[in-house]
Length: 261
Image: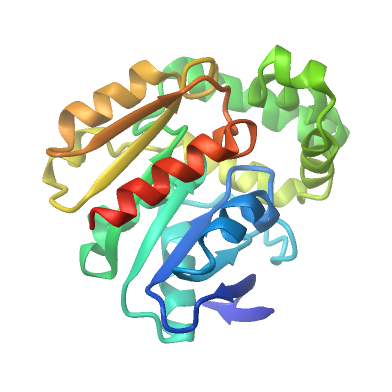
């Protein structure tokens, strides 16, 4: 379904238990809401689930960037308002995990508990330069120019060698992301600066890292854990898309965390 959120057409899907608490999923850069299909299936009996495509991704409008996290957070809050969602659990991976941080910091009363997976809270000079290179590739050659290098970062060598069905599915997600959405979100990431604010968070947080994640290594997520009082930390033997490569373990971590809230 499409909703006009602050002038942007945002695509979303609702599923699960109509009487359960709301649970919102936020996808990574260059994917769409389909990346959460295994978690949606596993948790649909207990939660009312909202998945959405961030601006410029999936079936959401390919609005020109650059974007900021105020834009991305505003899209979530606007979608919640549109749907009458007062409070929701929130799970985000990569840029979705960055969005999760902003929501928890700026809209604490709207978030019951937060899962931040395979993410970081600040943009280093090297990280910023890497995104300059990726943006240039996408602008010059379209999204096809970044497909294989992205797959190499997102999945371990052993998973890639397995030839799993998800590999081509994710390739398709990358190819069908708009260049505007990719570059707009990349510019938002380059302005990321939440690390020094995280010590103000006072609600339940689960951090999920990937041992073999070159994009957002566990060391950076340990820094986040040090600043978020009472936060839990889980490390899985995976690269960046931990919810796909280690789906059963990822989903089990969610279930355990939510059961304690």
